[in-house]
Structure formats: C-alpha cells, structure tokens
Image 1 (cartoon, rainbow, N blue to C red):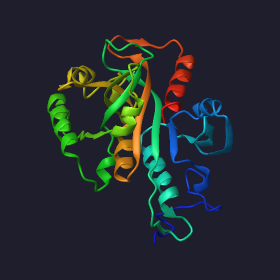
Image 2: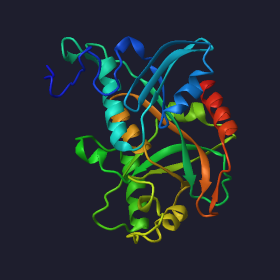
Image 3: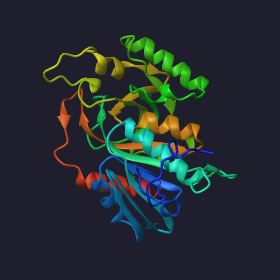
Image 4: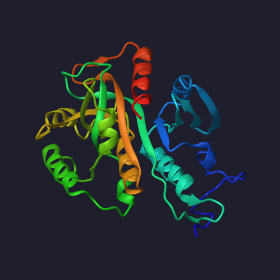
Length: 286
C-alpha cells in the first residue's frame, strides 16, 4: 500500500502535479513541452471532452477521426518527464483510492512531439527527426534500479568511447519502442539517436559568457557511426521518457521538428505551418 507521502494526491483526489483523474486521460497520449501546443493539437480534434491545467501541465482529451487521444504539456526537461511518466502510470495502474497496484496493468502509448536542433549538416531545417534511441546526458535513469538492454549497452559503450566525455558526465542510452517507431517512419523522417541534454546552453554546446567543459561535443556526436546508426539531434526530454516508459511497460516514441541546424548555424524563421503538418502526420499514425 502506497503511503500518502509517496503516492501524492491533491484535495480533490487527483494525481498531485498533473491534476487529472484516471477517466480524463486516454491510453494514447501526445506529450508536448509547450503549453500552447496543447490547444494547437486539440483544435484538430473532432470533439474535446476534457480540458484542465495545473501548473505547466495542460491536458486536453478528445476524439480525432474515431480515436480517443489526450494531449499533455510537460514543460522543459527530464525532471518534468520524471513527474509526468510516473503520474500517468499511476493514473492507469494504481487504484488511487485503495493505494495499491491494480490487478490488470494498462500499457500507454506516449508520443512526444517537440522541436530540436539538428546535428547533421545534410538534414534540412523543418525536417521530421524520429528518435531510434535517446542518449541521456541527464541523471534521471541513475536513480532507478532498472535492467539494461544488451544491444542498447553495446551502442552506448561505442558512443561513450567515441565521445571521451569528462568522468563526471555519465550518459545512458535507451531505444524507442519499435512498434511506434515503425508506425511513425516514412520517407519524410530522418531517424537516429537523439541526445537528451540537461540544459539548453553548455549541455548542447552553446557558449555565451561561461566557458565550456566539452568544447567539441557537437562535432564528436555528429561524427559517430554504429553500422548505419548516427546521432541526429539535440532535445531535452526523450531519454527519461523512454527509460521510464519502457520499464513501466509503456510504448514511447519521439518525433521532432528540426528548427535549427547547428553545424550550418541556421535557425528557422518561423515554423507554425510545419508544426501543424507534423501534428497531423502523428495524429494520422497513432
């Protein structure tokens, strides 16, 4: 039985941070960082049955072409993803009143739609970047006792040997769900390893007034190859999503719109239309 200090609910009996109840979410969930993107997606629904907001966590649930879908904003970073994935899992797999695990567990499909920086010069801005794996430069996974996949571990070891990072940086690598990855794959997507960084500036090789400890990180990432696999992009959420979701029995994937090409020093001049097109691309495939 989970004590109130561990499974935290608000005064309405809702899960603490998300502020929703089990019947208000679907088993198909689109995760977005930006709160405003929730309404951008739900505007495409045929009907919307639920809307709520608590802190940065905006949730809309509705129907799209006969499919019940929830959209939830996570805010920025893997710390927020730790909250989101654990609380979504609790909503479907823990009896919140009795505070015990349910006899039958429910797997969720969680697809992150975001924006990213591109690490390969040949990939154009506004491309769809589909994550085959995530390399976590955060530390969320290190706080959980979770098993490692042999194939992921081989790629991780090869990548870490190539990067030669300072010893205090301990990345981890985790694969996306194969079924969702295949469902989102097309001739429009560029697939590869997504680097999930713990910040926007130095952790992604950006230098303003403070010096960098990893001055050639982006170049080393871009030059890595493991068979046909390469590192495609930077973002800030996927590693925690994949590692927590996978080990809780959920299917997780990430597809991002590339809005900056880092080696070419190019940034999008506007991407509202392209993001709308990516949203429809995902909605039609889940």
